[in-house]
Amino acid sequence: MNSGTITTITPRIIIEECVRLGIKEEHLLIEAALSHDCLDNTSRRIPVKSMYLLWEAVMRCQRDRMFGVHAAVKVPFGAYGVLDYMLAASSSPKDGLDRSSRSFGLMNTAFHLSLGHYRDVSYLELSSLDDPHCLSRPYIEYIFMNYLVRLRHITRVACNPSEVQFTYGDPGGAPAYDRWFNAPVRFKQKTNRMIFSRHTMELRHPSADPELCEVLESYACQKKNHSPDAKQPLAHLYEVLNYQLANGIHSLPDLARYLGKSQRSLQRELSSHGMTFRDLLDHVRLKRASILLSHPGLPVAEIAARLHYSDISSFYHAFKRWTGVSPQQYRKRNGYN
Image (tube, rainbow, N blue to C red; front, side, top):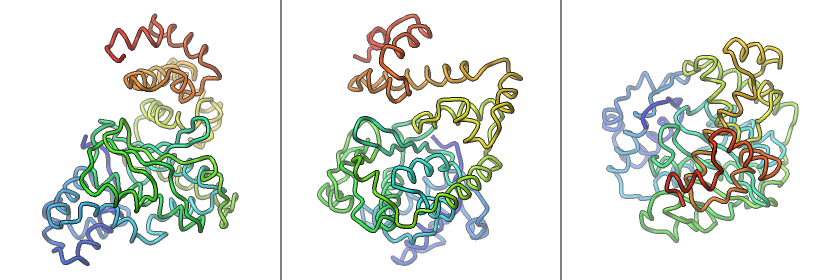
């Protein structure tokens, strides 16, 4: 649960808010094993473990159960640099969240943020790359509220989710959560997600600038791919396709475009490892399908849609080719029914 790194932006913001509330900065730094020099270096990355320790120290030092939410509301637009400006230059919340989730690793390589779509709704999901069900509660609330605050600022209207779901139990004060998110908040759910209606996702951004948005996303992608956390070539391809499949990346041109490479270059890279793009996609889809099938209440049709199959029968044939059994048989064999 403690693998991955984050930039120093969030810990600086949290510590500044705590100091404003009268909490001693030195105490928090000691608890999180951080230093002034570390936080002052804007290009520095720290282990996500330090951020978890900081959240634990913060929650012990004050009585506000919803500190993550309240702190996020006070973060000024622009604090997250290229991610904020790219979100504003996008054409709509759907476009902005889609781009932002692709570039989330620029700020945090420990979590997986994805925007999925099913029928008339979209959902922004957050999970840990190590354990999808194990995240710091105030950290989840901080990230979700950060995105809501920015969407409301950019759209200049009440850009609200239709529902918010958290995997943990109600920490107390559920009505307060409903008011801040301006939506029903459900606890003890299978995933951490914010669900949005199609209407909300298609709101037009007054500051939309397609050309600027492409430049910003290209810059974010290059910066992320050259970060100290960049994986070895094949492992990196697995990770990118695995965690961006939900965003519609499921073809060779899609993946090449996202990585900033030519299709020919990507094909050569895969060939050097003795595999094709189809091999890579099958591996990733099988891994994702196995995880999704472990949730009994998730319809097979929705799983097929999330894996970007044109119809459910195509998913059935592929899954049986991979495992020798149907999705229902797989669930029964593993006790997921």
